[in-house]
Length: 59
Image (cartoon, rainbow, N blue to C red; front, side, top):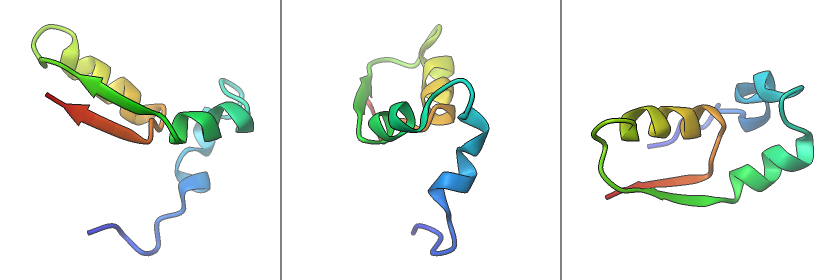
């Protein structure tokens, strides 16, 4: 269950400077699928989460 006090803008404000506001909004709307977590898959999921990708599907 999502935290009702969660503020998306505050949580990911650390990315400003690396990404513009427009780029952050675009990432928030992206859907990504990761197939297999061996090797680099786990690291990719962590990186995508840190960059605030909207939906990550693990297959």
